[in-house]
Length: 335
Ligand code: ATP
Ligand code: MG
Image 1 (cartoon, rainbow, N blue to C red):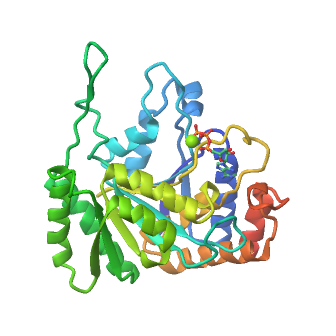
Image 2: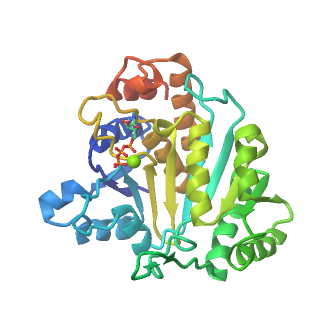
């Protein structure tokens, strides 16, 4: 069966890394069909909107999107398009793998292979309840944790562990201080964990988790946590394995999933062929997993690893003298 995916080429280095990624996917003969849709500055110029209805319809229809980074204009009251996409499609699980790769500038040459699952819709990042007093002296905000939100994110983590043969889920919280919100998350996480006796579960307070990640990252397998902690921890993990050029992410909901690179539009290097396409390629590998093609996902990851190990046509951020498309061709040649 042909699978159609919505392809959003995005802004800045977006089109370059998307060309590179589709070149590699095409070399795999997966029978994927691409449906182009605009979002970001490109869409604003062409259609007068950052997130046109036709783009939303395309994502809704295909249920799967591969997305390059998008620029949101500064000022003018535009809200982040990424946040809007998460809201529109209720993409509650932000899934961020961090894996050590050869030949990358990282403090840990091997042993890191973990996935952070961040709750993406509630917690401290809800937009309501943000208030600064009239005299400007006091600010308050609301953190909302729900049973539904906590249950589905923790369940997602345990189901992912089962599906992918991972053995341990670490529940990260701050229930000792944030007794109501983090407390409820921990309570529900324990209930869900009890339904998965085949998967080891442990608990860690977020501050200790940060220290442990830097000192002994190999002890982690899957981490599941609330929105704010997950935001911070997943970037920490990207740093452990050599930074933004290698960090993919998936935003997953009940009906729709969007796969992307974690980094932004990198305007400083846009249009120069310097961008490292690996983050988006690894996002595409997550997409293949999601589409029920784990062998193809593994094949893609192995070609990326082999190319990194050979130091073949690497981009400047990895210390190479290659360019975006040459790197992609080197990967495609190893498939
Ligand atoms: P945005 O506002 O869209 O987030 P930004 O200016 O914050 O853009 P990022 O894309 O977040 O830029 O990147 C931060 C730094 O990392 C930049 O110096 C950028 O060149 C570099 N960088 C990001 N992605 C890549 C990549 N794929 N390959 C090489 N360098 C990258
Ligand atoms: Mg940025």
